[in-house]
Length: 117
Length: 112
Image (cartoon, rainbow over all chains, first blue to last red; front, side):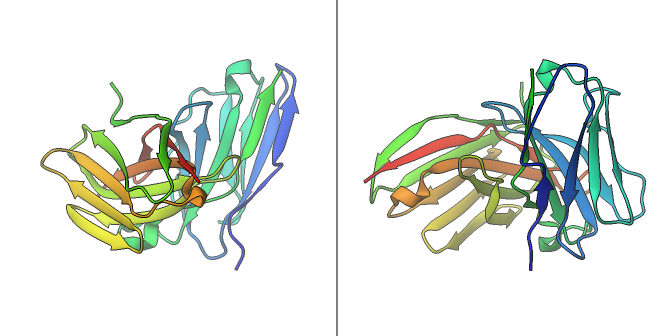
């Protein structure tokens, strides 16, 4: 089946504008994660969703960042009033479950490359 | 200090060489250890997955975990130019937040 898909693949915006990034997880995967990868840096956790539980937002860098997951499937990451330091690749991952073991292996999408001018 | 440290490289080796990639970590709660490979402008893809200590082999790849030293390794035998990529170690605890903590990645270049 299809893997994790993300759109758009590239996004260029002006400082102060809002952006929305979309993630379509693997069908049937209950857990969904957002990470950020800045130039030369490892992946930084932002937020995750597990089923109908409240999301873990502990990695969000500021209140300008928010995310939602509708119907337990598609997720949207929103960045309000973008700043130049928000420029990065935003990666989405999904896993079959969140109960430990092999089934919570995370599979990544290709990412959205965000450039804030 | 970062929870997971990884030498960024770049590491350049001739084709056929044995490659050793390493990460150290400080959080003793980490129980799951993974290696991801990331090609330029692509998402990371899972290479190896290990739970707790020990060795795991898959084809030309061997992952080792030494929890007593908080040190993990990935060995690539008979390296190929197609192995040229950035290798990311990642880990997570057994309970609580399962989001992965990543190293910064090591860029590997295998010269033909």
